[in-house]
Amino acid sequence: MDNKIYLLCFFMIYLIPSIYASSGDRSPFYQKCLKKCKKLNCTSDADFTEEAAALRDTSCKVVMWDCHDECRYHCMWRTVNVFNENGYDLPKFHGKWPFKRVMCLQEPTSVFASFLNLASTMYMHKEIWMTFRVTEAPMVPFWHMFIMVCELAWVWSMIFHARDTLLTEFMDYSLALAMVMMLFVSAVVRLLYEHRLLRVLLVLPLVSYYVAHVIYLHEGRVDYDYNMKVNVFFGVSAGLLWLGWCWQQYRRGLSYPWRLLLFCVWSGSALTLELVDGPPLLGWDTHALWHLTTAPLPLLFYKFVIEDVKHLQIKQKEREIKTL
Image (tube, rainbow, N blue to C red; front, side, top):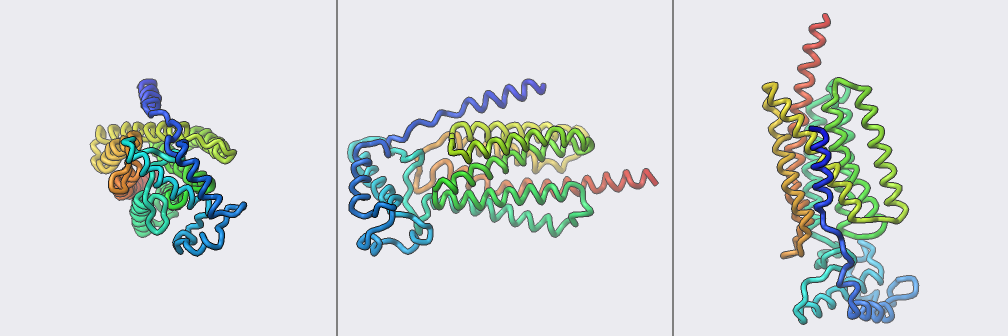
């Protein structure tokens, strides 16, 4: 059974389509436009000339768009118009679909959807704080750490979609994987709740792998295709582990994991939006829609967590009574 699960994980990973070079930024029109724009509006250190600086949007100053970024943005839309006039499909630029800025946010719909995920996560974090004392409830310290990783991931998702730079890309990729791997770790920790040593022996290699992956990203070899495969592998594996645990609980007559079951099915279905990678419609591409559909998931998952901690508390009290 275990071998079949791992084979399924690897099979799903290689269903992900390869990422090809973007046609928009490679087009001669875009390259010529970019060269001319930089010559007319930018200084040698990517700052604005006095004339160009006077025309800058105030919000773009806050988000720190430099002159080269502004040229890339405006030439991108000129290139899109040329592609449309000649009947070509909407092109990508530097691996991304073109989006109209709102308050100089690069991908405004993804920023909004990431904010919704952050808001629902923070709301449930407050619920857990108010429901349990950290020192008196099983697994609660772990769940606080889990939620804080998720909150950081969504904060950096907002920042990255607002402004794509090497730093924001690195932080978004690193913390997105941390969130996915924490979901996998949480399944391992819960399945092996009664076996502390085995938990440690399994979690330590996962931590080592994560550190190695972050170092790989930090050294400048950001490979979107590889990074996506790693995320999908751990995400799918976590879902399968949690589904197996749900099945065990239902066989024991416990019904409270229904929220976790719905969470796994919902998140797995939503993942298809990320793998399809369709062009934007009314400012929403499939990536932004993926984030939007995951916004209610923290409400489901952490409601399950609260019920599960209560269940563990009852079992703990029963063991304490038996030892008296």
